[in-house]
Length: 358
Ligand SMILES: Nc1ncnc2c1ncn2[C@@H]1O[C@H](COP(=O)(O)OP(=O)(O)OP(=O)(O)O)[C@@H](O)[C@H]1O
Image (cartoon, rainbow, N blue to C red):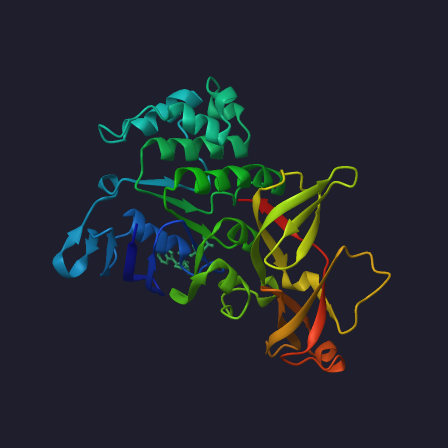
């Protein structure tokens, strides 16, 4: 799958001028409020007709202003999930899902109804009406409805934004399953770093209508590609590993990264499972001698690869820990007191780790 997007469009005083390509998986459009994420996904969906530009999916041209081509949204075969679920209130969940299926082209309406229902865990809700569902359940049904239309691509505009933290946590594993099981390419709008860290393969950072950075999730979130668009305090490391053990009495999982191990509390997700690990740079401290008598479970030995100052008294230190890059955000003062420089051996003390099954 290759999506090529190149659009220029004015909305009042705002100018959108963005260009990116995606090769499938989950592409996050990421940036502050007002950076143009919704406008950009709107041009892909066909909700906005750009003044200039070209949008093509696998060579199928959806927009080409130079040639007067604009495929209307109902003929693009994209599934769209908004912030709020927008279900039909008078229909049951089953009928809402059936409605999505009605849009699937003949021949693609294979019997995937029960698969989608299982994937999203909505089997027990089929006879209920939207008013009797929680926000998270409604959103899962909306995703199911979009999936059953056999979309070529799913467009999701902050699908978790209207939910409280508990509901977000409930729905994120379903989005991960969606990414891993269905292989439907997804363009996902978000301004939340932890969502992007968990879900995205590739990140397009928008700032004031323009693409400021684009790259693999681990590279973008490491901070070096972030500037005004996203708070550098949000930078961190996204790593992949495998659960090698679970200590049940202490509820502690051991995750093998490339060359070192992490211990993660409350992560009973089965040994042998591949996981994605997110470590916020502000949750990492550095020491130049191995610390003792600390409560932190994870003290990783490594070597400084590079140091980047943000001009606000903080530095982001990239530490190579046996093949994995761990980022630590510390004060410039601490950096100079510890005489930190590239090549210096250090210990990274990781305070918290977020871990998600892959
Ligand atoms: N129809 C319109 N007319 C004039 N300005 C508009 C219109 N639609 C959007 N804008 C402006 O365009 C800019 C980008 O808006 P957009 O909704 O795309 O941003 P966003 O990154 O999705 O923000 P948020 O995260 O808050 O949803 C904003 O400054 C907005 O006020």
